[in-house]
Image 1 (tube, helix red, strand yellow):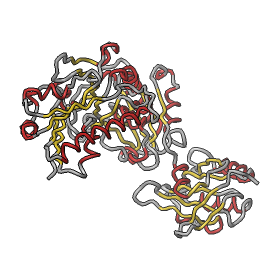
Image 2 (cartoon, rainbow, N blue to C red):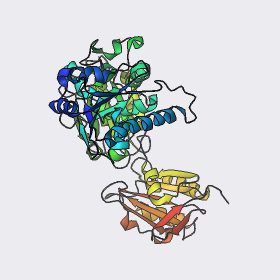
Image 3 (tube, rainbow, N blue to C red):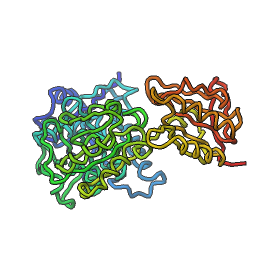
Length: 494
């Protein structure tokens, strides 16, 4: 008979936070194993000390190194892997002898814990039970006395060892967060919080429920004083009063062609951090409910200047405003409208930023293959803001230059002749067999992407939710083995 393996979570440090199940598992064990650094002391053992008996066999699993400097041929990871293999073999010997083994772990055994490396090597061979423990995340929130997340808020747990850009993106795009493993990563984490616009919200917790505990506002913490056993916390923002500012800002945010899945982390962060969202109602409806207390102002798609002025007025009164735009805000969208009004003297001191989004042309091209693989021109067929003869001139010039064409705003209920007129014009300059991508509602529930030819393009099948990609003389349409036709334009010309 082999023995039983326990992974025992001990909680964050206070022995009083050990669970009854943890105490029982220690009592049932013949062998108590715990990890330690090279100095030999073990925090896990110190937490469980009062429950250890003289007849317990103790297995101290001492790490061979604590920093990523080693002459091991496999590097740092190779050295650790050898250590875990050797440690697991020592525990397996006890289990094979019929002894019950309890591996002690601070916090929770399967949450950034050392036990998990034993579990992966032993649990498939031996009867195993994992006893969960109070995590450092829960301990930190308890010590701060602030809710960690509420309602539909998303909690993100991030290792501080990530690169700064990755930290920034993840912090910007979440509601609540806990950043683990501070220590020497603290300066990088602090910079990432600042870049994400979240530094003012950040809290600091050190050695929660342990001797030497410290909490505070993260921006006030001396980086030289931060140990490994500390975390940065972005608590819940539900019911939190918005900051009072003398001047706010306007951020024009591109949501991509179909909402949440297409948002960049930077755009999601701007939407999360905004006090007010302003935009065309259809585009606002694509933005998920980001946090309670945000105000939304939707309007018709024909009042762009008024919408821009409204957003800038709000910012002038101290609000952080996100103007929501579909696709990329700089491509036939809201960025120009906002900047045009922002250049008026009364708004000269209101900060304005533009964040890019996935364009409709790029989304349609990806869905169809790679028709924009070479030079291309982007033209709007809407003659609401420019005369049709200008559109014709540009179509003729781009077609004469043999550019692939991305045609936006091809038709609407009030504009029904443009697609046919554009097709007939292009047939004068291009082969009737030129591939044409007809992409409708890309990324949405009614997505339809077809490859037809210029001569078979049917104008009645095109509406405002459709984007057309007209190939050049080099563009190819190829039917694949799965029956799908893909379009692509070679990077080599001629």
